[in-house]
Length: 165
Image 1 (tube, rainbow, N blue to C red):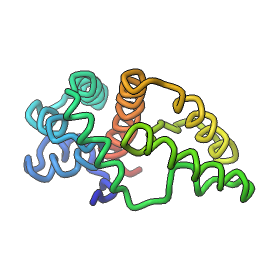
Image 2 (tube, rainbow, N blue to C red):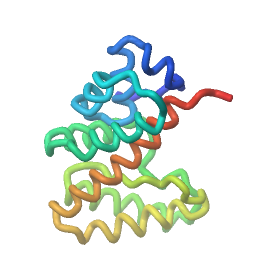
Image 3 (tube, rainbow, N blue to C red):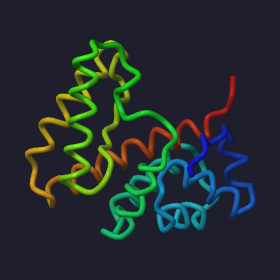
Image 4 (cartoon, rainbow, N blue to C red):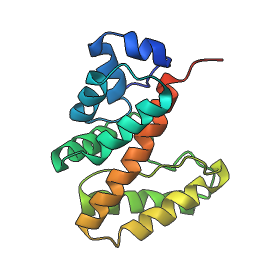
């Protein structure tokens, strides 16, 4: 089960024990290959270099790595994406049904990066995205899921190395 990554700061990220860094990275993206690659290429001179390396590693994920990362997202200890957003009971019911249909069709949880989406618009954004992506063929959806997972991992990683002000 994934735990929320703690804030490390880039210096601590670069200097920390490899096992601890890998564990922290797995909280950003559940692919062991991705986490090992980023751990092995330390130290990073700045956050931008780390994020660029993470992005590149995301693009290099093999199908098995992507499946591992998507499976890890299934174990997140939180409600379905969008369920905490304000909205009517009918909208939340539709959202639960769309999530179930997506998982039945594609065999993994729905992932979408919601950076920059206002909380009031989150439920509609997730529901619209779910409904649109349900029409995709599996190969197309795998590509979209990989891109969304990359964006999510970068956001989590940026938070991981942020220094508390």
